[in-house]
Length: 366
Image (spheres, rainbow, N blue to C red):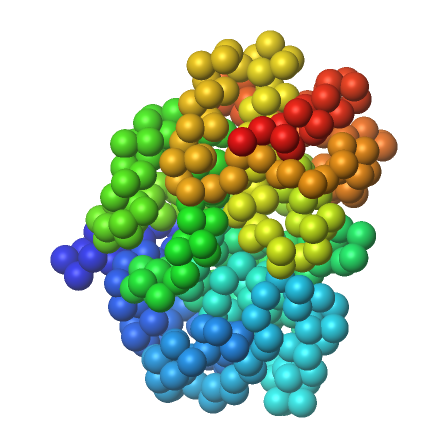
């Protein structure tokens, strides 16, 4: 649905737990949208030290009809831990929140995942409102109900599925996003075209210059189309028993990069971008993706200003870190690969030697 003020909306179809995604400018000021989504109790507004000075007061003002408490956490992937999660739980408990309360996550993927996990756990589950302020969070992590914190052994190893009551993606917040963070979000947008929508990939390839300039029209279109794809997949497979795993193209490789580098050295989208190149190279060596398609994957990712290689990681160490991936079943590593551009598959039939060869060669590519 489109409105004259630029508001666009869609729904994640999960029966009684269906919820809206709103995309457009100025949404953090839209108290009317928030009031329609919240259950009516108190709100804990969780943000970080980077986002809070920019948008906390605006979001709190839009929630003026509620008793709002705020919690500002340190910024960065390095703080996506059980210790920080405990701070959110402590704020809920000491703040006297009950089961009709709500946790509102104002920030990027780290805040959304962390605050969402706290909402999933506190009193066995309270409402969650996602207010994503980064491109990556607006197109991916705020939608679908995955919440988690990291563990030194692997990324997102401790978490739960907990759907929000709504997602409000205020596109105005992207104006204050550093260029590196913005480009990292484009990785997840590109992912959707690669896995399920070749037509969207064609559009992205043509629209990348405008997207990099943060042209409002193409940016809103990219967010909406990304969310439409994810919403459709989540509605079919909420708890990732099958098809939803396709959304993890590049993530098995990427999570290993993040863990080995130390959380925060690589942005998540950067690691996923390099991981998608590794997945495409693996697909090519299996005979699924031709050389022209492989070259196109590399070209699009590079054109978005994202890495196409991950130097400095030993293949054996990468493979070991990939073994902690949540798609491992029965000790077998399952990967999301490409049969063609726009058509992804999940497979556990990649020979170890081939994978080690890819990890060795791609990390040195430029």
